[in-house]
Length: 147
Image 1 (cartoon, helix red, strand yellow):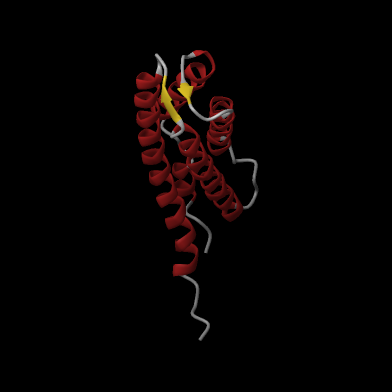
Image 2: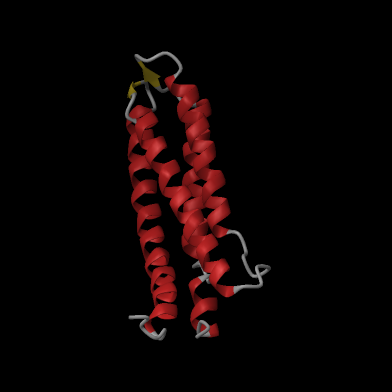
């Protein structure tokens, strides 16, 4: 049974205020990682953090990309789920890089901004992953059992 078209479209209707907020928070983080005074005792940790933050932003952009061009609804949802998984993986790698920071004039502000971004991002992700998961499950709820 195909997806309910309204449900499918609603699952990709990202709240513009939330996406704007996530983009702005990420922009502040990347700006502070490049230009801020952040310190660590590990050689190469700050450049690695910058790289991870950039990847995080790229994965967020991928998740928010329009998937209407994908002709098969199931593949559209599976692609979004894959993008969400990549974003979660990128967030985890960024977490590891951020944990190596331990000082600098901008450290406290960066840490607070990062934790707030992380919380908002996970809330956003969980909401959409749940909807996409429910959509995929609905395909199998109506399928006859093959016992």
